[in-house]
Image (tube, rainbow, N blue to C red; front, top):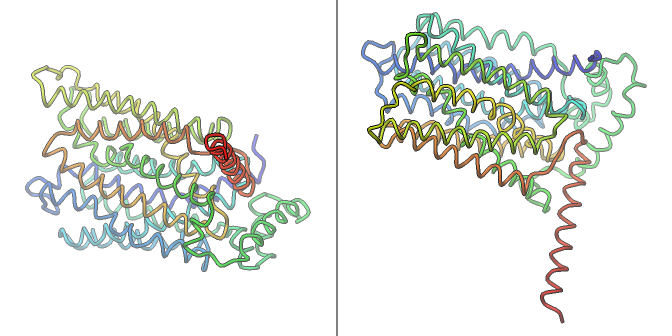
Length: 473
């Protein structure tokens, strides 16, 4: 079914995404132990307020690295930056293991955030540049598959290990990532940007599974022409908004990034055990429910990997946002009845878990993985690093706000309000994707840009014609 080149691209893409898997373990590590951390006698005593800071402060580190990472990826390369996340993650776990206090824990989370910022900035660039257009979407989906796998690994280990054993086990994962990714090739696009044409050809040969340059000469020439065209000018921040197409691209990644975070997946997964702590039955504990939901999110995330290059980006994100919005609204309604009315919903205490499982099907099949593809598909080679930095910063700000204020709103008003806010965000995403976002399925970067320019020009001419009709001389 797959030729050697396709398999090699998937391997390179997955090993790069293992950096994201490690980031997922940093978030997933919190869920199984959060309830114990805020109880008396915990390894690192803290209050509920401190726990929200511990969870959200990872985004402070994430705020520091995207812009430098985007710039350095154009100077040093995609591969070295991705590989550098491994030592940062490993050091953060060593700090947690040997310094048992709240300040050290926060410092380690900041280091994890710095590595996370590099991962979410550079990995999408690397994946998009090593992939053939026809499978770029499915390989890009590995980003989110890996993210959810990182969470699931922690959900499965945490409840059944001591705090120290759990942390030791997690610390081995970045080491495995470094060993796996070390052997992968650099991005051919980056090598062409640096005029390393022979190395670019060698990298492309490896990625396409070919033994002679005659099989890749046409693709390499298209890459070279595209790179030469956009590298005539040194990229500057103003280039991100230089043309209507650039401004539309920035608008799309900023808005969809906000919608992706405000759809709630990150916060729900982080606070899952705490949210379901009252829903214990004779058959399921909160940890069991968390593992089931985590497994379902991981498995369903492969749906987009299979279908994204068949159905296209727009339909997947639209259906995903709509389904996620409906399920979050139902979950919010349940939590409202439970907290603010005298209606006894205890006999339906597994209803939210079932709803969140259905929600995970929607959010992991489109809104999560597919929205991130636009980050690397809508921009030219010379501005892709800068655009990824903006996207990462945008995600960081939204993630910090969501992770920090989840606990605050839950304590002061109720978790129902959080779910209703998430639901509203998803419905807004439906409207935005329908009217604004383009389809990029199976298109080269040049074709995507040309189509955006064409549609903007058509709209401008239509508006001018309408103005002339409404205001005749």
